[in-house]
Image 1 (cartoon, rainbow, N blue to C red):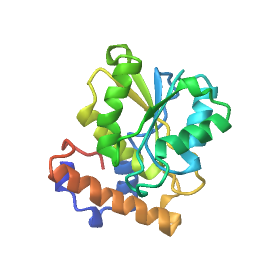
Image 2 (cartoon, rainbow, N blue to C red):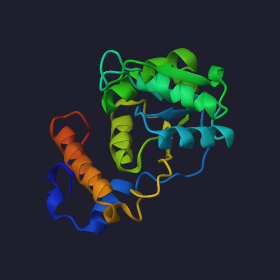
Image 3 (cartoon, rainbow, N blue to C red):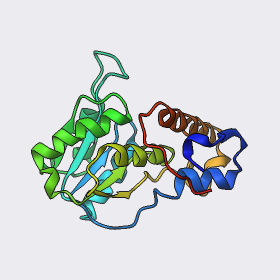
Image 4 (cartoon, rainbow, N blue to C red):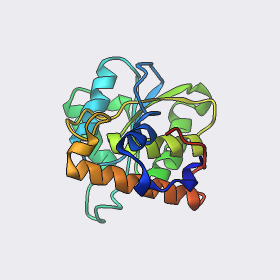
Amino acid sequence: MKLSELNPDTLSREEITTLMFHDTIDDQQTGECILVFGAKTIHRVIKAADLYHDKRAPKILVSGSAARWGENEEPEAIWMRDRLVELGVPSEDILLELEAANTTENVLASLMVLQRSIGLNQIHRLLIVSSPYHMKRCHLTLTTYMPDWISYSFCSDDRESGQRNNWWKDEREKARVMKELHSIQQYVKDGILKDGDVRR
């Protein structure tokens, strides 16, 4: 069955878990850069810093503008960079993307930053950092818009709730997963994301 053909409201908890979390498990490989999708949440920053200090990748790219927060607000990327520096990441190893206001733009705008700073032809693997519930959309967006020779390690943040094994136990995290699933399907139907067969 295609993703566009699913009825999210009829899926079992196990089917939702497989659909939303199966393809986004960290394989522990190293890469050329850690890409952090924008949000002012310390969970993602801590995860990116841990990956950097574990020498999983030599650079961190933080992506995100102030568009969701207002003109006078600090861009997400700047906020994340400052927290990363506080966690011991050298500023020269942090790349900034300051234009993106959503997941699709995170990927598209990061392409130019990666090209200019590293060279897309030099990138074989990116480590992807975001919230657990957001990883499926990150995966689909990356495989829709990024060059097909780049592989990914999906390193969701380490928040206590909202993980593959407990997302349904917290009502807020459960609502996030269900909202995300509906959004993903709509993006597929709108042609923003590529459709494909789903594992259930």
